[in-house]
Length: 293
Image (tube, rainbow, N blue to C red; front, side, top):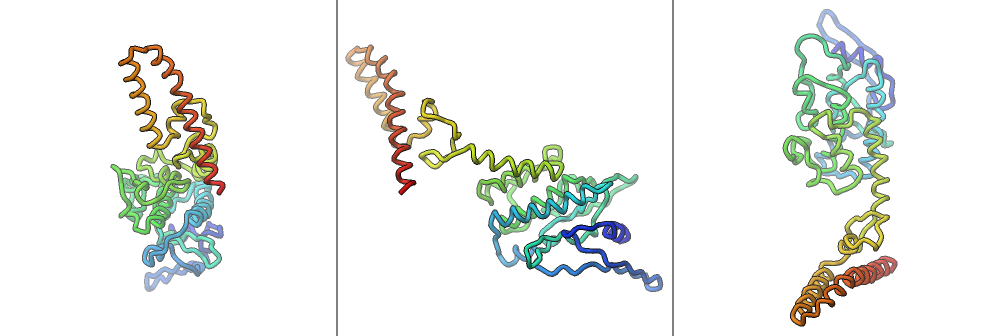
């Protein structure tokens, strides 16, 4: 309690409740913290009501809470919250997120002796089970909180692959899922260790998406991939076009062998790239025409 009071008294950030005072009744053995009342909606209410926030809303929440963690982790020594979860984030009516409940807060130093496990299963990083808490631990909990909101279920119910949370089953591909998946690595050494690293990943993801464009089959291919590569052209064909090309190839080879016109085999091998490129080009033109319509 006294640790929480001392830390809160030193914190000044719009994403953290303002500290108002501390009272101690020695006769009754009671202590009281007075903090700013945060009006709004706790994120845990999304889980109970079934509300699902859009990716844009979750990215906005991520950005705001990263600002709070950047402030906390930038102090000397860094302040680690240790218990970020939907119930400890309140969104004000104006949309601003506030991180509350600093009862488990600690400063990033290792005192001698044993450590107390603080956190909530499903949201706390695995290393907290061993009393270890670093800025990367808060980033893990933040990612688990947003992943739970995206999936519409508590953090301990998120699917897992081995020791890692597997977001592919509960979130569509995109920038948010890619970044959260990296933040949820069970090994802290493979996880972003700072807010700056998370932001760098967020900025890198749109650039990667811009370098990929949809192919004629709706998959992604490099934007600079031209029609000169036979492998790229083959990937651009539909399943029916591929079957037709293979049938044409083997029928032609069979006729060449039966008639012993081996020179035709050589000509055929030369013509195959041309035929694939022609079909690929026609398919792309038809696809683009349909998109324009």
